[in-house]
Length: 506
Picture 1 (cartoon, rainbow, N blue to C red):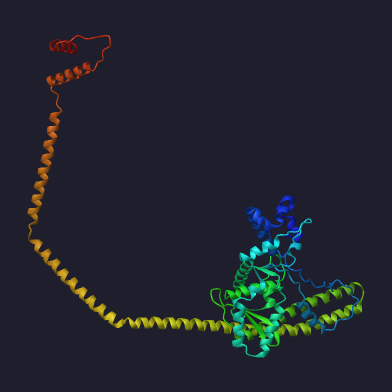
Picture 2 (cartoon, rainbow, N blue to C red; picture 1 turned 45 degrees about the horizontal axis):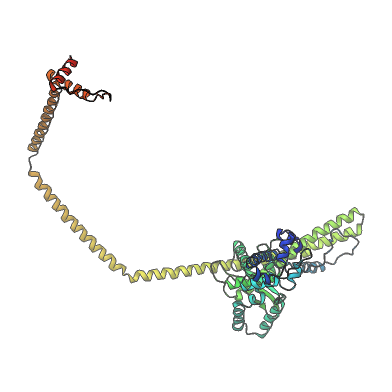
């Protein structure tokens, strides 16, 4: 995967060729008039290049990278003993540091031609290409994408449900915070945002087990948890991309967001209970469950950090023993025991208690779903019973009994008639019928014997008749003999011909 825009451009064969690069980096507005087919090819090339570069995060502003931290495990052991109160402070500070990823769903329009310069050439027609992409709807300005129907829904929801001035000020503060996107120059690739939102929804509903707790996320958890479906590399989802994906999910009624309280600008994101359902507004129960889950996640991170701290202190104590630093080794062991027996134990107990609360909430949510299922089933059964009552079941079964009795009566009449017919046929003499049948069979056998005798008599040979048949056969064979062309036979009379044939027979 390319790590810079120059590395990305160097892999494109069209740009490595000087002649093709000269055409693609020329004034394409003039090519639109002089060479329409060439302009269309250039438009297709630049569209694919910009989308691919944006997807790799090569066209956004430079990411913010914090200063690297020293590895305290491998650092020198000449430091002073660390106070136990600083352990949790370090844990909380570790959570706040992260690397801001580059956007893979939008790109900066300002300075785009300079970023695409390659081997001393700068594309002069790229601004026209971007304008054409914007006219065709491939890209849209970020301010227009975010200020759609979602913003109007948010405004209406805040006006109806958040009349408190403090909450409205928190909304405005959150708007100011999320306006870190350079709305004047950022262009959003609609197809990339829609595909990323679909992958995020698939990933969420594949892991969500409880609708109450698993469907409630903070913006930070959302950026960390769903970075992989959006990014082509590991990292944290940028704030710009998170806002764009969330806006797309809100427009599809798959998620919604709101402010937790007036004193905090933290965003609460709520997904729909199921993929096929629309998301419901955030309720007070959702806010309370989110607060419990957030507390559990915070304590869990602190426990993980404390466990890592214990291992770190143990390693430091071992290194001090190897270096014959008895005092430092005792200090590390004392701090390690304090963290294990006091700080870590209390945090672990708090985590266990909060886990029980989360399980209670999940059980209550499950009970609510079960009651809703029973309620839906009761309504369905009530409707079916009403339909059955409208059909007058008693009348239907009374009519059925009457018609079944009538059918039995008709069947009895038919059985009586068949018996009468059978009794009338019993007056015929069966012995007479058998004698007549035997006479017919004897006559048929006599007829077959007579025909066989006649066939045998016809096969007996008659001498005179046989000779006449032989004479006729020879006469026919003689008449079929073909004479040569130079021989002209005389016309024999009938008597001579007959004598001649008799002689041949003899």
